[in-house]
Image (cartoon, rainbow, N blue to C red; front, top):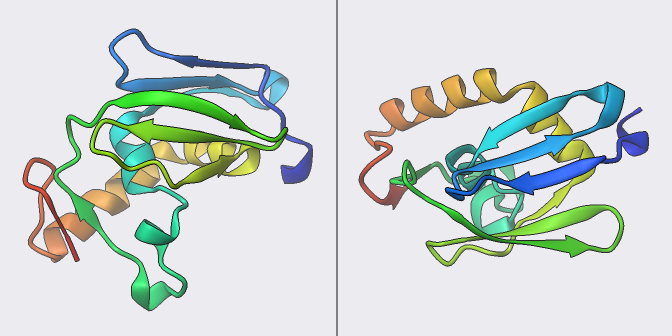
Length: 124
């Protein structure tokens, strides 16, 4: 099913803090800019192996300043901190939306375990 997921609507909230994305009967989600930024599918955040993956702190107030199509399978998000290398495929966005509470809880636990927080920049 993941390959068959297509958005029916993508909308950036007026305050640029939320991406609203609908997938028809597969669900509609509001995904916070902070979660999108810290869960970026970019090599900068994910690395090339699990050992290279970074936990990014200090992104509580990050804004989405651009949403650009990438072919017919994804979007690229540009953030006000300069990050713009993540390509968010439809299936990944659906997964982030459907699991946003659990992913955010895990992110907060990672921040705490690494001595980072949502307000001070840093990554480990």
